[in-house]
Length: 279
Image: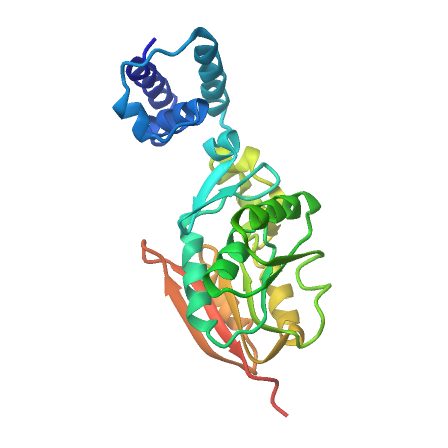
């Protein structure tokens, strides 16, 4: 079987099964199998796949057809123009989260110390470190997730310092100028409505916050004034319909509230500056 035939047959099977972007998925898996860029598949359509490679490609397709995300099969996901390692221990970085990075960079000009809360794969922390040239602290409650973040920081040459803890519980008082967080924000009751790939394969601790989906926002916003220096910023990714309740959590002392929408027009990021509690 040559590459062109293998891709055509794989694309057809994936499309019939309702897998999103079937042709792209077939190409990504075959390129991963061959250790080549996707453009190689188009430059060498007549190249023959050996029988062992055909069997291995079939196993990769079977995993994807069973619902396993392509990123967990290949162990890779691009974020902010860089390739990150991912595993089932971490949430797969989404393009929408790049808006969080952009907002953080916009307010980070005077941020000497930066903290990424619930860092998962480290995509946000590593990106901020590389884009600003500064050290970034990062926390996560999962040691397995921090192991992935550590490897990404090592591979990409980022200065990221990792802490195993729940949110900001291990961070000293008045030590940070910028806190960023993409928290779990899916209400537990909405689990059944998630895509199979998300519901069955991504880590629940990174998805579900509690009955309302707002629980982590409450806890983080309550403790952020302890951790931030006066004038420091808090930048949060927002879940669906989270803007109004999250904004309502910002009591006196929070100023300069900013909201950034994603490409679909949904409020995606909220930033607020801590100016200190009134006397």
